[in-house]
Length: 597
Image (tube, rainbow, N blue to C red):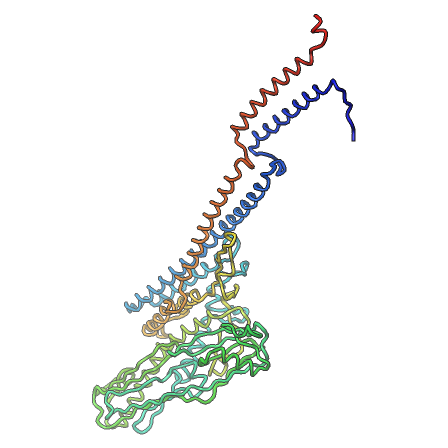
Protein backbone atom coordinates (compact mmCIF):
# COMPACT_ATOMS: atom_id res chain seq x y z
CA UNK A 1 0.00 0.00 0.00
CA UNK A 2 1.36 3.37 -1.05
CA UNK A 3 0.50 6.50 0.94
CA UNK A 4 0.44 9.61 -1.19
CA UNK A 5 2.16 12.70 0.03
CA UNK A 6 -0.14 15.29 1.49
CA UNK A 7 0.30 18.98 1.53
CA UNK A 8 -2.30 21.32 2.94
CA UNK A 9 -2.12 23.65 -0.02
CA UNK A 10 -2.88 20.93 -2.59
CA UNK A 11 -6.31 19.83 -1.32
CA UNK A 12 -8.28 22.22 -3.53
CA UNK A 13 -6.36 21.15 -6.64
CA UNK A 14 -6.84 17.45 -5.83
CA UNK A 15 -10.58 17.96 -5.52
CA UNK A 16 -10.70 19.73 -8.85
CA UNK A 17 -8.73 16.97 -10.55
CA UNK A 18 -10.95 14.26 -9.05
CA UNK A 19 -14.05 16.15 -10.19
CA UNK A 20 -12.73 16.47 -13.72
CA UNK A 21 -11.80 12.76 -13.86
CA UNK A 22 -15.26 11.80 -12.54
CA UNK A 23 -17.03 13.94 -15.15
CA UNK A 24 -14.77 12.50 -17.85
CA UNK A 25 -15.64 8.93 -16.79
CA UNK A 26 -19.31 9.86 -16.68
CA UNK A 27 -18.98 11.36 -20.15
CA UNK A 28 -17.36 8.14 -21.46
CA UNK A 29 -20.14 6.06 -19.88
CA UNK A 30 -22.86 8.15 -21.50
CA UNK A 31 -21.08 7.98 -24.85
CA UNK A 32 -20.96 4.19 -24.61
CA UNK A 33 -24.65 4.03 -23.64
CA UNK A 34 -25.49 6.22 -26.62
CA UNK A 35 -23.58 3.97 -29.04
CA UNK A 36 -24.80 0.58 -27.63
CA UNK A 37 -28.23 1.44 -26.29
CA UNK A 38 -27.41 -0.60 -23.17
CA UNK A 39 -27.36 0.64 -19.60
CA UNK A 40 -24.15 -1.27 -18.81
CA UNK A 41 -21.90 -3.89 -20.29
CA UNK A 42 -21.97 -6.14 -17.22
CA UNK A 43 -24.72 -7.19 -14.84
CA UNK A 44 -22.65 -5.64 -12.04
CA UNK A 45 -22.99 -2.32 -13.78
CA UNK A 46 -26.79 -2.51 -13.39
CA UNK A 47 -26.58 -2.28 -9.65
CA UNK A 48 -29.71 -3.38 -7.80
CA UNK A 49 -31.52 -3.92 -11.15
CA UNK A 50 -29.29 -6.84 -12.04
CA UNK A 51 -31.63 -9.38 -10.35
CA UNK A 52 -34.56 -8.16 -12.42
CA UNK A 53 -32.48 -8.34 -15.59
CA UNK A 54 -31.14 -11.82 -14.92
CA UNK A 55 -34.61 -13.19 -14.20
CA UNK A 56 -36.17 -11.59 -17.26
CA UNK A 57 -33.40 -12.76 -19.59
CA UNK A 58 -33.74 -16.34 -18.34
CA UNK A 59 -37.48 -16.25 -18.99
CA UNK A 60 -36.96 -14.75 -22.46
CA UNK A 61 -34.42 -17.45 -23.28
CA UNK A 62 -36.96 -20.11 -22.27
CA UNK A 63 -39.62 -18.54 -24.52
CA UNK A 64 -37.12 -18.48 -27.39
CA UNK A 65 -36.55 -22.21 -26.82
CA UNK A 66 -40.29 -22.94 -26.89
CA UNK A 67 -40.72 -20.88 -30.05
CA UNK A 68 -37.84 -22.67 -31.79
CA UNK A 69 -39.28 -26.09 -30.86
CA UNK A 70 -42.77 -25.09 -32.02
CA UNK A 71 -41.49 -23.71 -35.33
CA UNK A 72 -39.65 -26.97 -36.04
CA UNK A 73 -42.63 -29.09 -35.00
CA UNK A 74 -45.08 -27.08 -37.09
CA UNK A 75 -43.38 -28.25 -40.26
CA UNK A 76 -43.59 -31.87 -39.13
CA UNK A 77 -47.25 -31.60 -38.18
CA UNK A 78 -48.15 -29.91 -41.46
CA UNK A 79 -46.39 -32.65 -43.43
CA UNK A 80 -48.07 -35.39 -41.38
CA UNK A 81 -51.47 -33.79 -41.88
CA UNK A 82 -50.82 -33.43 -45.61
CA UNK A 83 -49.91 -37.14 -45.85
CA UNK A 84 -53.08 -38.14 -43.98
CA UNK A 85 -55.13 -35.90 -46.26
CA UNK A 86 -53.56 -37.62 -49.26
CA UNK A 87 -54.34 -41.06 -47.79
CA UNK A 88 -57.95 -40.00 -47.26
CA UNK A 89 -58.14 -38.78 -50.85
CA UNK A 90 -56.68 -42.06 -52.14
CA UNK A 91 -59.12 -44.05 -50.01
CA UNK A 92 -62.11 -42.02 -51.22
CA UNK A 93 -60.94 -42.27 -54.83
CA UNK A 94 -60.61 -46.06 -54.62
CA UNK A 95 -63.92 -46.54 -52.84
CA UNK A 96 -65.76 -44.26 -55.28
CA UNK A 97 -64.28 -46.11 -58.22
CA UNK A 98 -65.27 -49.48 -56.75
CA UNK A 99 -68.86 -48.40 -56.17
CA UNK A 100 -69.18 -46.94 -59.67
CA UNK A 101 -67.73 -50.00 -61.35
CA UNK A 102 -69.99 -52.43 -59.51
CA UNK A 103 -73.00 -50.43 -60.61
CA UNK A 104 -71.93 -50.16 -64.24
CA UNK A 105 -70.98 -53.81 -64.90
CA UNK A 106 -68.63 -52.58 -67.63
CA UNK A 107 -66.44 -55.42 -68.89
CA UNK A 108 -63.41 -53.18 -69.32
CA UNK A 109 -63.52 -51.54 -65.91
CA UNK A 110 -62.11 -54.33 -63.68
CA UNK A 111 -58.64 -54.04 -65.25
CA UNK A 112 -58.82 -50.24 -64.95
CA UNK A 113 -59.89 -50.53 -61.33
CA UNK A 114 -57.01 -52.85 -60.49
CA UNK A 115 -54.54 -50.44 -62.13
CA UNK A 116 -56.03 -47.48 -60.27
CA UNK A 117 -55.75 -49.39 -56.98
CA UNK A 118 -52.11 -50.22 -57.74
CA UNK A 119 -51.36 -46.57 -58.51
CA UNK A 120 -53.12 -45.45 -55.33
CA UNK A 121 -51.19 -47.98 -53.26
CA UNK A 122 -47.89 -46.65 -54.65
CA UNK A 123 -49.00 -43.11 -53.81
CA UNK A 124 -49.97 -44.19 -50.29
CA UNK A 125 -46.51 -45.71 -49.78
CA UNK A 126 -44.90 -42.43 -50.86
CA UNK A 127 -47.15 -40.47 -48.49
CA UNK A 128 -46.16 -42.66 -45.54
CA UNK A 129 -42.45 -42.42 -46.33
CA UNK A 130 -42.42 -38.61 -46.11
CA UNK A 131 -39.57 -36.88 -44.26
CA UNK A 132 -39.43 -33.59 -42.37
CA UNK A 133 -35.93 -32.31 -41.73
CA UNK A 134 -34.43 -35.77 -42.25
CA UNK A 135 -37.00 -37.37 -39.92
CA UNK A 136 -39.45 -40.04 -41.12
CA UNK A 137 -42.69 -38.76 -39.62
CA UNK A 138 -44.56 -42.10 -39.70
CA UNK A 139 -41.85 -44.19 -38.00
CA UNK A 140 -42.60 -43.23 -34.39
CA UNK A 141 -39.35 -43.03 -32.45
CA UNK A 142 -37.39 -44.83 -35.19
CA UNK A 143 -37.06 -41.53 -37.06
CA UNK A 144 -34.09 -42.65 -39.16
CA UNK A 145 -35.91 -45.76 -40.47
CA UNK A 146 -38.06 -45.65 -43.61
CA UNK A 147 -41.37 -46.98 -42.28
CA UNK A 148 -42.92 -48.69 -45.32
CA UNK A 149 -41.44 -51.09 -47.88
CA UNK A 150 -42.04 -50.58 -51.58
CA UNK A 151 -45.30 -51.46 -53.29
CA UNK A 152 -43.60 -54.24 -55.24
CA UNK A 153 -42.23 -55.81 -52.05
CA UNK A 154 -45.71 -55.66 -50.51
CA UNK A 155 -47.34 -57.38 -53.48
CA UNK A 156 -44.72 -59.82 -54.68
CA UNK A 157 -42.44 -60.22 -51.69
CA UNK A 158 -38.65 -60.25 -51.92
CA UNK A 159 -37.77 -63.52 -53.73
CA UNK A 160 -34.03 -63.00 -53.29
CA UNK A 161 -34.57 -63.14 -49.51
CA UNK A 162 -37.16 -65.92 -49.64
CA UNK A 163 -39.92 -63.59 -48.41
CA UNK A 164 -43.53 -63.86 -49.60
CA UNK A 165 -45.77 -60.88 -50.27
CA UNK A 166 -49.51 -60.28 -50.13
CA UNK A 167 -50.30 -62.20 -53.33
CA UNK A 168 -48.81 -65.38 -51.85
CA UNK A 169 -50.87 -64.97 -48.67
CA UNK A 170 -54.06 -64.44 -50.69
CA UNK A 171 -53.46 -67.59 -52.75
CA UNK A 172 -52.75 -69.54 -49.56
CA UNK A 173 -55.90 -68.24 -47.86
CA UNK A 174 -58.11 -69.00 -50.88
CA UNK A 175 -56.88 -72.58 -51.04
CA UNK A 176 -57.59 -73.11 -47.34
CA UNK A 177 -61.05 -71.54 -47.57
CA UNK A 178 -62.16 -73.35 -50.71
CA UNK A 179 -61.09 -76.76 -49.45
CA UNK A 180 -60.36 -79.86 -51.54
CA UNK A 181 -63.82 -79.87 -53.15
CA UNK A 182 -63.82 -76.16 -53.94
CA UNK A 183 -67.11 -75.64 -52.12
CA UNK A 184 -66.02 -73.93 -48.92
CA UNK A 185 -64.87 -77.06 -47.08
CA UNK A 186 -68.39 -78.48 -46.88
CA UNK A 187 -68.98 -82.21 -47.17
CA UNK A 188 -71.91 -82.98 -49.46
CA UNK A 189 -73.60 -86.34 -49.60
CA UNK A 190 -76.55 -87.89 -51.37
CA UNK A 191 -78.72 -90.73 -50.16
CA UNK A 192 -82.16 -92.09 -50.83
CA UNK A 193 -84.20 -88.96 -51.53
CA UNK A 194 -81.84 -87.00 -49.25
CA UNK A 195 -79.12 -84.41 -49.87
CA UNK A 196 -76.93 -83.74 -46.84
CA UNK A 197 -74.28 -81.16 -45.97
CA UNK A 198 -71.74 -81.23 -43.13
CA UNK A 199 -69.14 -78.74 -42.02
CA UNK A 200 -65.48 -79.74 -41.93
CA UNK A 201 -64.86 -82.39 -39.30
CA UNK A 202 -61.69 -80.64 -38.07
CA UNK A 203 -62.68 -78.17 -35.31
CA UNK A 204 -59.69 -75.87 -35.95
CA UNK A 205 -60.47 -75.75 -39.67
CA UNK A 206 -64.12 -74.96 -38.90
CA UNK A 207 -63.01 -72.07 -36.68
CA UNK A 208 -60.95 -70.46 -39.44
CA UNK A 209 -61.82 -71.56 -42.96
CA UNK A 210 -64.67 -72.15 -45.37
CA UNK A 211 -68.40 -71.79 -44.95
CA UNK A 212 -70.30 -72.24 -41.71
CA UNK A 213 -73.80 -73.72 -41.92
CA UNK A 214 -76.24 -71.36 -40.21
CA UNK A 215 -79.80 -72.31 -41.21
CA UNK A 216 -81.91 -74.22 -43.73
CA UNK A 217 -85.57 -73.94 -44.69
CA UNK A 218 -88.13 -74.99 -47.29
CA UNK A 219 -91.05 -73.22 -48.90
CA UNK A 220 -93.08 -76.45 -48.91
CA UNK A 221 -92.13 -78.84 -46.13
CA UNK A 222 -94.62 -81.44 -47.38
CA UNK A 223 -92.64 -82.06 -50.56
CA UNK A 224 -89.20 -80.68 -49.72
CA UNK A 225 -88.10 -81.26 -46.16
CA UNK A 226 -85.30 -79.18 -44.61
CA UNK A 227 -83.58 -79.90 -41.32
CA UNK A 228 -80.71 -78.15 -39.59
CA UNK A 229 -78.59 -79.31 -36.65
CA UNK A 230 -76.45 -76.47 -35.22
CA UNK A 231 -72.87 -77.13 -34.34
CA UNK A 232 -71.19 -76.92 -30.96
CA UNK A 233 -68.07 -74.92 -30.20
CA UNK A 234 -64.90 -76.89 -29.55
CA UNK A 235 -62.92 -76.78 -26.32
CA UNK A 236 -59.63 -74.95 -26.79
CA UNK A 237 -56.69 -75.43 -24.45
CA UNK A 238 -53.52 -73.36 -24.53
CA UNK A 239 -49.96 -74.39 -23.79
CA UNK A 240 -46.48 -72.84 -23.74
CA UNK A 241 -43.39 -74.80 -24.73
CA UNK A 242 -41.37 -72.52 -22.43
CA UNK A 243 -42.12 -69.77 -19.96
CA UNK A 244 -42.32 -66.43 -21.77
CA UNK A 245 -39.92 -63.74 -20.65
CA UNK A 246 -41.25 -60.42 -19.43
CA UNK A 247 -42.28 -58.41 -22.47
CA UNK A 248 -42.76 -61.36 -24.83
CA UNK A 249 -45.80 -60.94 -27.06
CA UNK A 250 -48.42 -63.45 -28.13
CA UNK A 251 -50.97 -63.01 -30.91
CA UNK A 252 -54.43 -64.49 -30.39
CA UNK A 253 -57.25 -64.33 -32.93
CA UNK A 254 -60.71 -64.61 -31.38
CA UNK A 255 -64.17 -65.19 -32.83
CA UNK A 256 -66.69 -62.37 -32.54
CA UNK A 257 -70.43 -62.79 -32.17
CA UNK A 258 -71.11 -62.02 -35.86
CA UNK A 259 -68.71 -64.75 -37.00
CA UNK A 260 -65.84 -62.41 -37.85
CA UNK A 261 -62.44 -62.50 -36.20
CA UNK A 262 -60.37 -60.00 -34.25
CA UNK A 263 -56.62 -60.02 -33.67
CA UNK A 264 -55.36 -59.37 -30.14
CA UNK A 265 -51.70 -58.89 -29.23
CA UNK A 266 -51.00 -59.56 -25.56
CA UNK A 267 -47.79 -59.03 -23.61
CA UNK A 268 -46.43 -61.34 -20.92
CA UNK A 269 -45.73 -59.44 -17.71
CA UNK A 270 -44.40 -60.37 -14.32
CA UNK A 271 -46.25 -59.47 -11.12
CA UNK A 272 -49.08 -56.97 -10.98
CA UNK A 273 -48.24 -55.62 -14.44
CA UNK A 274 -49.81 -58.77 -15.83
CA UNK A 275 -53.25 -57.53 -14.76
CA UNK A 276 -53.12 -54.50 -17.03
CA UNK A 277 -55.13 -54.27 -20.24
CA UNK A 278 -53.41 -56.04 -23.13
CA UNK A 279 -51.24 -58.14 -20.82
CA UNK A 280 -51.26 -61.51 -19.06
CA UNK A 281 -49.36 -62.68 -16.01
CA UNK A 282 -46.37 -65.00 -16.12
CA UNK A 283 -47.23 -67.80 -13.72
CA UNK A 284 -44.96 -70.11 -11.76
CA UNK A 285 -45.42 -72.83 -14.40
CA UNK A 286 -46.20 -72.88 -18.12
CA UNK A 287 -49.64 -74.31 -17.33
CA UNK A 288 -50.41 -71.43 -14.99
CA UNK A 289 -49.18 -68.92 -17.58
CA UNK A 290 -51.44 -70.51 -20.21
CA UNK A 291 -54.39 -70.27 -17.81
CA UNK A 292 -53.57 -66.62 -17.18
CA UNK A 293 -53.48 -65.95 -20.93
CA UNK A 294 -56.88 -67.57 -21.40
CA UNK A 295 -58.25 -65.57 -18.47
CA UNK A 296 -56.98 -62.35 -20.05
CA UNK A 297 -59.08 -63.13 -23.13
CA UNK A 298 -62.21 -62.84 -21.01
CA UNK A 299 -63.80 -66.06 -22.25
CA UNK A 300 -63.56 -65.16 -25.95
CA UNK A 301 -63.62 -68.06 -28.40
CA UNK A 302 -60.10 -68.72 -29.70
CA UNK A 303 -59.59 -69.23 -33.42
CA UNK A 304 -55.79 -69.27 -33.62
CA UNK A 305 -52.65 -68.39 -31.66
CA UNK A 306 -49.15 -67.38 -32.69
CA UNK A 307 -45.84 -66.44 -31.09
CA UNK A 308 -42.14 -66.73 -31.50
CA UNK A 309 -40.51 -69.94 -30.32
CA UNK A 310 -39.72 -69.62 -27.45
CA UNK A 311 -42.16 -69.25 -25.78
CA UNK A 312 -43.96 -71.38 -28.39
CA UNK A 313 -47.67 -70.99 -27.64
CA UNK A 314 -49.99 -73.67 -29.05
CA UNK A 315 -53.75 -74.24 -29.06
CA UNK A 316 -55.42 -77.66 -29.02
CA UNK A 317 -58.98 -77.94 -30.37
CA UNK A 318 -61.08 -80.82 -29.07
CA UNK A 319 -64.68 -81.97 -28.95
CA UNK A 320 -67.26 -79.65 -30.43
CA UNK A 321 -69.61 -80.64 -33.22
CA UNK A 322 -69.90 -79.76 -36.88
CA UNK A 323 -73.22 -78.27 -37.98
CA UNK A 324 -75.20 -80.23 -40.57
CA UNK A 325 -78.25 -79.88 -42.70
CA UNK A 326 -80.27 -82.13 -44.98
CA UNK A 327 -82.95 -81.76 -47.61
CA UNK A 328 -85.47 -84.52 -48.19
CA UNK A 329 -87.31 -84.89 -51.50
CA UNK A 330 -90.85 -86.23 -51.27
CA UNK A 331 -93.59 -86.93 -53.76
CA UNK A 332 -95.31 -84.14 -55.60
CA UNK A 333 -92.55 -81.56 -55.84
CA UNK A 334 -94.02 -78.74 -57.90
CA UNK A 335 -92.50 -75.94 -59.90
CA UNK A 336 -91.79 -73.01 -57.59
CA UNK A 337 -91.07 -75.09 -54.51
CA UNK A 338 -87.71 -74.01 -53.07
CA UNK A 339 -85.15 -74.66 -50.42
CA UNK A 340 -82.95 -71.99 -48.78
CA UNK A 341 -79.55 -72.44 -47.19
CA UNK A 342 -77.85 -69.73 -45.13
CA UNK A 343 -74.06 -69.76 -44.92
CA UNK A 344 -71.70 -67.78 -42.69
CA UNK A 345 -68.25 -66.49 -43.62
CA UNK A 346 -65.38 -65.71 -41.28
CA UNK A 347 -65.48 -62.00 -42.11
CA UNK A 348 -68.90 -61.68 -40.48
CA UNK A 349 -70.90 -61.67 -43.71
CA UNK A 350 -73.49 -64.23 -44.78
CA UNK A 351 -74.52 -65.82 -48.07
CA UNK A 352 -77.99 -67.15 -48.80
CA UNK A 353 -78.52 -69.80 -51.48
CA UNK A 354 -82.02 -70.44 -52.78
CA UNK A 355 -82.75 -73.30 -55.20
CA UNK A 356 -86.12 -73.41 -56.91
CA UNK A 357 -87.77 -76.43 -58.54
CA UNK A 358 -88.62 -76.05 -62.23
CA UNK A 359 -90.02 -78.26 -64.99
CA UNK A 360 -86.68 -77.98 -66.74
CA UNK A 361 -83.37 -76.44 -65.68
CA UNK A 362 -79.85 -76.07 -67.02
CA UNK A 363 -77.62 -78.73 -65.40
CA UNK A 364 -75.11 -75.93 -64.69
CA UNK A 365 -77.70 -73.73 -62.97
CA UNK A 366 -76.90 -72.28 -59.56
CA UNK A 367 -80.47 -71.22 -58.84
CA UNK A 368 -82.82 -73.94 -60.12
CA UNK A 369 -83.13 -77.72 -60.26
CA UNK A 370 -85.27 -79.81 -62.59
CA UNK A 371 -88.17 -81.91 -61.34
CA UNK A 372 -87.28 -85.43 -62.41
CA UNK A 373 -89.41 -88.35 -63.43
CA UNK A 374 -88.96 -89.86 -59.96
CA UNK A 375 -88.11 -88.43 -56.53
CA UNK A 376 -84.65 -89.99 -56.88
CA UNK A 377 -84.08 -88.10 -60.13
CA UNK A 378 -85.25 -84.89 -58.47
CA UNK A 379 -82.87 -85.60 -55.57
CA UNK A 380 -79.93 -86.01 -57.99
CA UNK A 381 -80.87 -82.76 -59.74
CA UNK A 382 -81.14 -80.94 -56.41
CA UNK A 383 -77.74 -82.29 -55.33
CA UNK A 384 -76.12 -81.11 -58.56
CA UNK A 385 -77.67 -77.66 -58.35
CA UNK A 386 -76.59 -77.35 -54.72
CA UNK A 387 -73.04 -78.29 -55.65
CA UNK A 388 -73.10 -75.71 -58.45
CA UNK A 389 -74.40 -73.02 -56.10
CA UNK A 390 -71.87 -73.80 -53.39
CA UNK A 391 -68.97 -73.81 -55.85
CA UNK A 392 -70.13 -70.50 -57.36
CA UNK A 393 -70.54 -68.94 -53.91
CA UNK A 394 -67.12 -70.22 -52.88
CA UNK A 395 -65.48 -68.75 -55.97
CA UNK A 396 -67.13 -65.36 -55.56
CA UNK A 397 -68.11 -64.31 -52.03
CA UNK A 398 -65.83 -66.73 -50.18
CA UNK A 399 -62.90 -66.03 -52.51
CA UNK A 400 -63.40 -62.29 -52.00
CA UNK A 401 -63.55 -62.85 -48.25
CA UNK A 402 -60.25 -64.76 -48.47
CA UNK A 403 -58.66 -61.82 -50.30
CA UNK A 404 -59.85 -59.28 -47.73
CA UNK A 405 -58.89 -61.43 -44.73
CA UNK A 406 -55.44 -62.19 -46.13
CA UNK A 407 -54.90 -58.48 -46.80
CA UNK A 408 -55.88 -57.60 -43.23
CA UNK A 409 -53.61 -60.34 -41.88
CA UNK A 410 -50.73 -59.08 -44.00
CA UNK A 411 -51.03 -55.50 -42.78
CA UNK A 412 -51.39 -56.64 -39.17
CA UNK A 413 -47.88 -58.01 -39.52
CA UNK A 414 -45.41 -56.34 -37.16
CA UNK A 415 -41.61 -56.21 -36.82
CA UNK A 416 -42.08 -57.36 -33.21
CA UNK A 417 -40.79 -60.90 -32.80
CA UNK A 418 -43.65 -63.37 -33.06
CA UNK A 419 -46.14 -60.98 -34.65
CA UNK A 420 -45.49 -61.52 -38.35
CA UNK A 421 -48.57 -62.09 -40.59
CA UNK A 422 -50.22 -65.39 -39.74
CA UNK A 423 -49.81 -68.12 -42.34
CA UNK A 424 -51.81 -71.25 -43.11
CA UNK A 425 -50.31 -74.34 -41.51
CA UNK A 426 -48.71 -77.01 -43.69
CA UNK A 427 -51.68 -79.39 -43.27
CA UNK A 428 -54.13 -76.66 -44.33
CA UNK A 429 -56.35 -77.20 -41.30
CA UNK A 430 -55.42 -74.08 -39.34
CA UNK A 431 -52.85 -71.34 -38.98
CA UNK A 432 -49.21 -71.96 -38.11
CA UNK A 433 -48.56 -71.29 -34.44
CA UNK A 434 -44.90 -70.40 -34.84
CA UNK A 435 -44.55 -66.98 -36.43
CA UNK A 436 -43.36 -67.17 -40.02
CA UNK A 437 -39.95 -65.84 -40.95
CA UNK A 438 -40.74 -66.09 -44.66
CA UNK A 439 -43.15 -63.17 -45.01
CA UNK A 440 -42.41 -59.53 -45.86
CA UNK A 441 -42.92 -57.22 -42.90
CA UNK A 442 -44.35 -54.16 -44.62
CA UNK A 443 -43.81 -51.81 -41.66
CA UNK A 444 -40.30 -51.24 -40.30
CA UNK A 445 -40.80 -48.41 -37.80
CA UNK A 446 -41.54 -48.16 -34.09
CA UNK A 447 -44.38 -50.19 -32.53
CA UNK A 448 -45.27 -48.10 -29.49
CA UNK A 449 -48.73 -48.61 -27.97
CA UNK A 450 -49.31 -44.84 -28.06
CA UNK A 451 -48.05 -43.49 -31.42
CA UNK A 452 -48.67 -39.84 -30.51
CA UNK A 453 -46.36 -40.08 -27.50
CA UNK A 454 -43.42 -41.14 -29.69
CA UNK A 455 -42.68 -37.47 -30.47
CA UNK A 456 -43.42 -34.56 -28.15
CA UNK A 457 -42.88 -30.81 -28.25
CA UNK A 458 -42.26 -28.75 -25.11
CA UNK A 459 -44.43 -25.79 -26.03
CA UNK A 460 -44.49 -24.12 -22.61
CA UNK A 461 -43.44 -24.47 -19.00
CA UNK A 462 -46.09 -27.12 -18.39
CA UNK A 463 -47.46 -27.66 -21.90
CA UNK A 464 -46.41 -30.65 -23.96
CA UNK A 465 -47.88 -31.41 -27.40
CA UNK A 466 -47.73 -34.97 -28.77
CA UNK A 467 -47.12 -35.15 -32.53
CA UNK A 468 -45.86 -38.71 -33.14
CA UNK A 469 -47.32 -41.01 -35.81
CA UNK A 470 -46.86 -44.59 -36.97
CA UNK A 471 -47.79 -46.07 -40.33
CA UNK A 472 -49.15 -49.20 -38.60
CA UNK A 473 -52.04 -47.43 -36.88
CA UNK A 474 -55.39 -49.16 -37.40
CA UNK A 475 -56.93 -46.61 -39.77
CA UNK A 476 -53.84 -46.63 -42.00
CA UNK A 477 -53.59 -50.44 -41.95
CA UNK A 478 -57.21 -50.83 -43.04
CA UNK A 479 -56.79 -48.23 -45.79
CA UNK A 480 -53.75 -50.03 -47.17
CA UNK A 481 -55.50 -53.40 -46.84
CA UNK A 482 -58.55 -52.16 -48.75
CA UNK A 483 -56.52 -50.70 -51.61
CA UNK A 484 -54.06 -53.60 -51.75
CA UNK A 485 -56.82 -56.24 -51.79
CA UNK A 486 -58.03 -54.85 -55.10
CA UNK A 487 -54.54 -54.18 -56.47
CA UNK A 488 -53.49 -57.80 -55.84
CA UNK A 489 -56.37 -59.36 -57.76
CA UNK A 490 -57.00 -60.20 -61.42
CA UNK A 491 -60.45 -60.84 -62.86
CA UNK A 492 -59.78 -62.19 -66.34
CA UNK A 493 -60.39 -65.92 -66.69
CA UNK A 494 -58.20 -68.32 -68.64
CA UNK A 495 -60.73 -68.03 -71.48
CA UNK A 496 -60.16 -64.28 -71.62
CA UNK A 497 -63.52 -63.28 -70.17
CA UNK A 498 -64.03 -61.05 -67.14
CA UNK A 499 -65.34 -62.68 -63.95
CA UNK A 500 -67.71 -59.85 -63.05
CA UNK A 501 -69.31 -61.75 -60.15
CA UNK A 502 -65.99 -62.16 -58.37
CA UNK A 503 -65.02 -58.59 -59.23
CA UNK A 504 -68.18 -57.31 -57.58
CA UNK A 505 -67.56 -59.48 -54.53
CA UNK A 506 -63.96 -58.28 -54.11
CA UNK A 507 -65.01 -54.67 -54.74
CA UNK A 508 -67.60 -54.94 -51.99
CA UNK A 509 -65.06 -56.35 -49.51
CA UNK A 510 -62.43 -53.74 -50.42
CA UNK A 511 -64.93 -50.91 -50.04
CA UNK A 512 -65.87 -52.32 -46.64
CA UNK A 513 -62.24 -52.21 -45.52
CA UNK A 514 -62.02 -48.60 -46.67
CA UNK A 515 -65.02 -47.62 -44.56
CA UNK A 516 -64.43 -47.38 -40.82
CA UNK A 517 -67.16 -49.07 -38.78
CA UNK A 518 -68.31 -48.00 -35.35
CA UNK A 519 -65.52 -48.46 -32.84
CA UNK A 520 -62.81 -48.52 -35.53
CA UNK A 521 -60.23 -45.80 -35.88
CA UNK A 522 -60.68 -43.64 -38.99
CA UNK A 523 -58.38 -41.43 -41.03
CA UNK A 524 -60.57 -38.49 -40.03
CA UNK A 525 -59.77 -39.18 -36.38
CA UNK A 526 -56.07 -39.20 -37.13
CA UNK A 527 -56.45 -35.91 -39.00
CA UNK A 528 -58.31 -34.46 -36.03
CA UNK A 529 -55.48 -35.46 -33.69
CA UNK A 530 -52.97 -33.48 -35.72
CA UNK A 531 -55.38 -30.61 -36.26
CA UNK A 532 -55.69 -30.30 -32.49
CA UNK A 533 -51.91 -30.53 -32.14
CA UNK A 534 -51.46 -27.72 -34.67
CA UNK A 535 -54.06 -25.60 -32.86
CA UNK A 536 -52.41 -26.23 -29.50
CA UNK A 537 -49.00 -25.25 -30.86
CA UNK A 538 -50.41 -22.10 -32.48
CA UNK A 539 -51.92 -21.12 -29.14
CA UNK A 540 -48.66 -21.88 -27.34
CA UNK A 541 -46.74 -19.86 -29.92
CA UNK A 542 -49.02 -16.87 -29.36
CA UNK A 543 -48.59 -17.14 -25.59
CA UNK A 544 -44.80 -17.43 -25.92
CA UNK A 545 -44.59 -14.37 -28.20
CA UNK A 546 -46.80 -12.33 -25.87
CA UNK A 547 -44.80 -13.40 -22.82
CA UNK A 548 -41.54 -12.60 -24.56
CA UNK A 549 -42.77 -9.15 -25.60
CA UNK A 550 -43.93 -8.40 -22.07
CA UNK A 551 -40.60 -9.45 -20.59
CA UNK A 552 -38.65 -7.43 -23.13
CA UNK A 553 -40.80 -4.39 -22.33
CA UNK A 554 -40.06 -4.86 -18.64
CA UNK A 555 -36.34 -4.47 -19.39
CA UNK A 556 -36.79 -0.97 -20.83
CA UNK A 557 -34.93 1.32 -18.46
CA UNK A 558 -33.13 -1.61 -16.86
CA UNK A 559 -31.03 -3.12 -19.64
CA UNK A 560 -31.64 -0.43 -22.20
CA UNK A 561 -31.60 3.36 -22.13
CA UNK A 562 -33.45 6.13 -23.90
CA UNK A 563 -31.08 7.53 -26.51
CA UNK A 564 -32.80 10.93 -26.33
CA UNK A 565 -32.32 11.10 -22.58
CA UNK A 566 -28.71 9.96 -22.80
CA UNK A 567 -27.98 12.48 -25.55
CA UNK A 568 -29.39 15.31 -23.43
CA UNK A 569 -27.33 14.21 -20.44
CA UNK A 570 -24.28 13.90 -22.64
CA UNK A 571 -24.62 17.43 -24.00
CA UNK A 572 -25.20 18.86 -20.53
CA UNK A 573 -22.21 17.03 -19.09
CA UNK A 574 -20.06 18.00 -22.05
CA UNK A 575 -20.92 21.67 -21.47
CA UNK A 576 -20.12 21.35 -17.76
CA UNK A 577 -16.85 19.60 -18.50
CA UNK A 578 -15.80 22.26 -21.01
CA UNK A 579 -16.61 25.02 -18.53
CA UNK A 580 -14.66 23.20 -15.80
CA UNK A 581 -11.68 22.77 -18.14
CA UNK A 582 -11.81 26.51 -18.98
CA UNK A 583 -11.98 27.63 -15.33
CA UNK A 584 -9.25 25.22 -14.34
CA UNK A 585 -7.09 26.43 -17.18
CA UNK A 586 -7.55 30.05 -16.14
CA UNK A 587 -6.84 29.31 -12.50
CA UNK A 588 -3.76 27.32 -13.36
CA UNK A 589 -2.28 30.37 -15.13
CA UNK A 590 -2.81 32.72 -12.18
CA UNK A 591 0.17 33.63 -9.86
CA UNK A 592 1.20 36.30 -7.29
CA UNK A 593 2.77 38.26 -10.13
CA UNK A 594 -0.71 38.83 -11.60
CA UNK A 595 -1.80 40.54 -8.42
CA UNK A 596 1.40 42.63 -8.03
CA UNK A 597 1.06 44.34 -11.38
